[in-house]
Image (tube, rainbow, N blue to C red; front, top):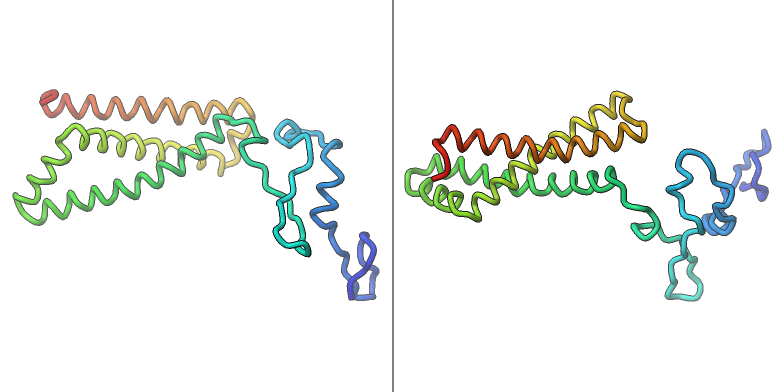
Length: 185
């Protein structure tokens, strides 16, 4: 048995309260919103999806980049996901390297030729940056998991440190690597 009212269910009747439908919630608007995240919330209610059939229910559309102002932490989250995908491809390159090393001198020479080209070096540089950026993003999330770094300035600082640190560490790693190999060949 479902209660018709919107309040709590009556004790002992077995009735449950029906939550407000989405349409009613979004028609009420967001004028009364206040607090910490009020600036991120849309000024107007969300748009409703167009329905193709006359009897179907219109559901609210999720807000996207048209509503929310891009922030550094938002962009770093997107880049973290992209670098995760790049690491998948880079792992295939590492597997190719190991298979070539185990297959013999001809296979390894082919791998060295491909990775020694300009395009190969750019791919390896990008893989190195993706690996370091993803690692630093993971450290940032570890800091958040410990309950620290949630203040507005701290979030922005951690995101900027992830970006600057990944570029800086990648450059340092490549410069040191070239110096150990005797310079650019």
